[in-house]
Length: 215
Image (cartoon, rainbow, N blue to C red):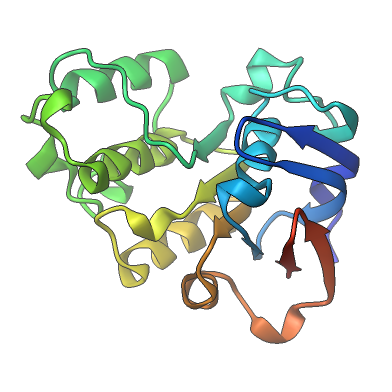
């Protein structure tokens, strides 16, 4: 097996919705890993910690050997869809996407994310006018803006206006480019639809009260 790109050791972290305690993860690039959970059982805290937005209270998280909380450069190479699709109200969606591309410095080819996710229909809309599913779709598009991501972390990605049929090829392309992929979802069906192989589910951990499947 490839060496882990994303690794946690005895990770304990908590946000306003729930906490994780003593979590061990080791995920390589390529295969799509799936974690089953909801924000209240600590999955939200996990996503924030992996993204470098929340400092662990105990334990550690390393991505490509670096602590995401301490490395702004590393965070620019992460694509993260959080539980809450909070978008900056900068006017129009196209302006938000242009702003995000500028922050990243580089972007993936537009045909690889812009067209499949239907952003052309959302681009002329005002950010404030988007419903929750549309807003989540825009955040998902911002995840795929990252040209050469080290890690993609997608929380409940199928709650956006996107199907597994659309999303799976996009994940496959990123995996082939060497990204580590982690899907967090409360739905067993969504996990099965997006991660690689049910038969490779080799171990189970505990996050709050929920079981995590690690492939």
